Length: 223
Image (tube, rainbow, N blue to C red):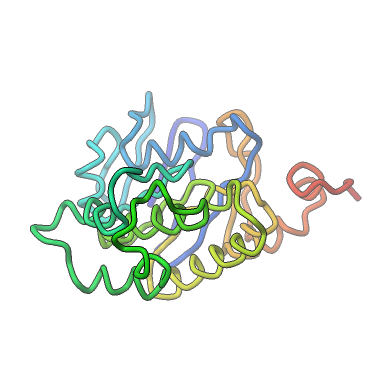
């Protein structure tokens, strides 16, 4: 995937985990929403596997193979876990059994709670459901927006282990995450955004060791 405007460009190569870092308001969520079609860019272009998707409606973007687990989870609280997952598979005539089995293998707790209303799940379980719902569309690119927000450390570690497994199974991941250290340990590469512009890009290990990144995003004094 390639997102380009007149001032900057970022790339996500097949098989990678790429993370976007930046303070609140830097444009990270906006970038994901532009990729998934929830926002129409005012300029530039977005290409996915060579096809322009900027301005394409979200349901058509999903049909091309882009899944989105949004910030705040956005599950349907009055619907059951299974019904939420079925919504993720809306583009298929019927819910594909293979995708459902995959989600339940990644998130066994969702299998146990398949008949439970989503609004009664814990925060961590709702996040698992949001990711699982995005996977039901059989994406080749998964957009994750703040998957650790508001979760206990043990649950965060579990979520990141699952994201690592999703990537190992062949799904490319574009990640926005407030926990910069966790994100950079997971990612192959990263971009740092400031007020809508990319100010740094490098392999994740280099960003993790960069004193400017450590000072701005990891809460450490610059060396």
